[in-house]
Length: 166
Image (cartoon, rainbow, N blue to C red; front, side, top):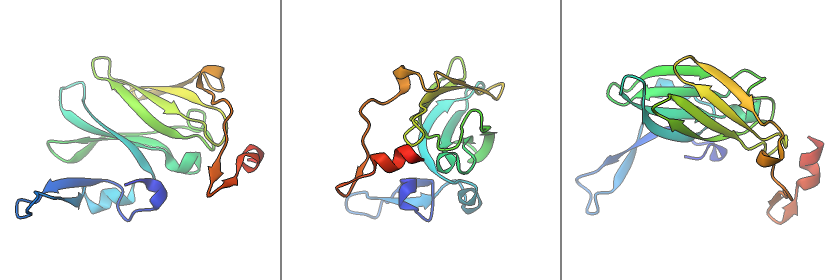
């Protein structure tokens, strides 16, 4: 469920329907309706073990590109309970940041998060220490994380100039 479509639910679980001819899967709210209200814009999800070996669903909420509060949430898949919550400060996820993808080093319990910098042209890598709940913003604006010849076109309209003015 992509957040740009403003779906009524942000996170769903696909459950096998044994009564369907093709075993079609039906979406079910996950983990609860209350949880849905605390998510703004979940875009990336990963399943990886925590330091105790529990399987965790890690959710990256990019917080409407820094207009809201970007955060990482961990749900224990055995209990369906939230076991980790971290909100990024504005110096880590500034206005118009776009935390949109991440990978996890399960052995070191470190997340590597890409800030695409789509709107503010300030791409970066955010390194998040899961155990110590500490984040660092690295390479902000460095050419290695900055798009070149970036052009934004929507329905044949070039928005590149407007985006530069933000």
